[in-house]
Each structure stands twice: as structure tokens, then as C-alpha cells.
Image 1 (tube, rainbow, N blue to C red):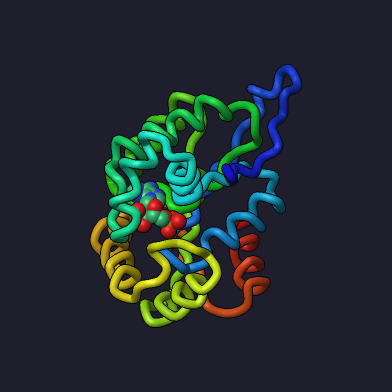
Image 2: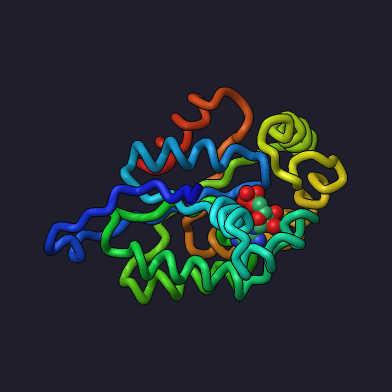
Length: 208
Ligand code: AMP
């Protein structure tokens, strides 16, 4: 099932309304997916999860899905060109029809962050905030192994793969914090505690 949850606004003249775009940042298992759904609902944003998009492609057996599978099953990143192309298509399809986007699991590399800025600029919009959920590695491993009991995801079951995903995050994704700090958009949020408390902290960060 393709999980892009957004209400598209078709009425004439909507293009002039400024979009509000947020990145939910953090390691795998930090709660981005859970919180993105809640934030999208609360702020009327369109939730785009590259992990969900890639899993849909995999399940549908498309060329893109087949290419992505080998990387995903090992906990490695799918090549930038594939993911950026996929996001570009989604933005072409949806920009100016929604109030804005909440990006979950994207960008994950410096080229993806730069490409996203360029793609949004083409749509005369930009990222407003990057909300980073901070969770320790041990908590991540515990959470993902628990999720693996029901998620059916190949990359959620093996501890070595989960630790590799965390290392990939530290090496390739965590450095993006500096990119967004340089743009004055980065907000760090404690990602451990109750779902409701973390959600409240995210909402507070959005409204500040
Ligand atoms: P996620 O559901 O966000 O944990 O993503 C699951 C897997 O999909 C990752 O381990 C990667 O293999 C792949 N993936 C998701 N988003 C991206 C991205 N932005 N760049 C590269 N690979 C990605």
C-alpha cells in the first residue's frame, strides 16, 4: 500500500498559498514514522516516507523496487539518483496541491539534502524546519527488534543489520545536522519517552 497521506487541495488559486515543509530527522527506529503521521494530521501536511515508497516499489516488483531490494535488505542506502528521482516525481505530482510536506527518512545524504533544496526552490518553496529525534543506539536496537516481530521487514529482524543501519546513519546522515544548523533550521528533540510527550515537544518546536 502506498502510504502518502495527504489531502490534496484542488481549488483554483491555491498555488499562491505558501507551503510549510518539515523534515523529521533521526536514526532508524527513532519514531519518525509514528510522529510524522501524527504531525501530518495535525498540520495538514502530506507525509512522504522514502522507506514506505521503496517498500511499495519492492512489493509491486517494479524495476526500481528490484534495484532497491538488495540495498534495503542489508541496511545500506539505496543510491541517491534512485531516491532523488522518486522524490522529484512525487513533488511534481503533489506540490501546489497540498499545504506542504513532511519528509520522513529523506534526505539521508548530503547530495539528497542539496537536491531537495533545489527541487523545492523550483516549486518556489523551501524547508521551514528540521526536527531531529535523539535516541540512543541501544534503545534503537531494542525498539527495532520489537518492531520486527510484527513488521515483516527483512531489515528489522537481525541485530547486525540493525546496527549497520545505525552506523550508516552516523556516517552518512548525521552529518546533515551541520548543513541544516548552517541554515538555522535544526531543532533537536528528545526522542525517548511517551509518544504523546514527544509529539507535544515536536508541535512546540514547529510553532516556535
Ligand atoms: P526506513 O523505512 O526509512 O528505515 O528505510 C528503510 C530502508 O530504505 C533504508 O535502510 C534504506 O535502505 C532505504 N531508504 C529509505 N530512505 C532512503 C533514502 N532517503 N536514501 C537511501 N535509501 C533509503
